[in-house]
Image (tube, rainbow over all chains, first blue to last red; front, top):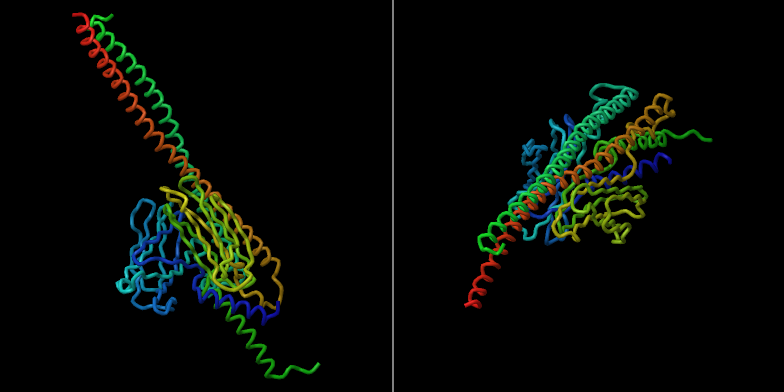
Length: 221
Length: 225
């Protein structure tokens, strides 16, 4: 592919991506809350970028940018504790680092009062969440630490391997949890079966004795 | 062949720099390759759609998996900018679909849980658009990659597939673990419930039987006298 063709393709992709900024987007209602789950090992950095656009009912189009539109971002760790709870503008970037491995919940909701004026307001949210190694910005790292090309490539490989290692540790932790759950089920099935058999036998004995004394009292036996 | 004039050389240089700048800008603005990996919860009777603007000729891959909930299945539908359905599957647990964008525009894909009455589903999807851009704008390189650099590139690709396999393994394990925890709670509730039912039924039987005999006694005495 010649230089001009490559440049043109890059430009087209840039325009497409810039117009859609951060690629993927979805629609959200007025006070609707949208939650996303990230299952990550500990000490992993997560960077989220978002951009919101408001639906203009008269023009039937999404406005390019609306000042005064706010999004509340809340991040909860696997134990339910709030790690991050902040209000950002219509365009924002949030970062957090996990301290416990597990399912982190990232919730977004709009609490802009202006939306109440537009009945049936709809919001377009562009979202991009990068986890771990993908969150690193390599050209920036190269510029900051003044790395040569080979050093930067080695750094990227090191980051990837570190991420794999963290995931493996997390995997071991999860497998242990899974094993505990299975053993607990096993124990429960065993003890409850024994308990139910014992209850069955005891109630049977009680029934017979009670009825026997009842019939003897009634002089039928 | 006539020597290129200074104006032409300037244009060529500007073109080269412009392409480099664009590629760098592309890298900074979009990050590693417009790939989105998202896990979200789909409530019962709900449908959730995601959109992405894709350029023509870009190779894209959509991969999804249901992690928790009910029978671990979901409906998925992918439409191109004209509304033509490119991919449609009902009640699928896991699938991967690769396509090349035939036209520019907004592509839409939706996950639906409308067939389910009360189970929430957790769905994971990975939407990869185009290839990951290279670490450096290597299209502008004068020389080919050295052996060291191409070794690094192949290690990078191999590690990427390792991470990919790890993700799939993690999802399957999460699915298995969710089923195991479901089973655990269900065993507990059903056992307690059954024990109670057993007690109630046996005590109830005895009292019901007793009540039959007390009625019969009064009728026999009346007949006797």
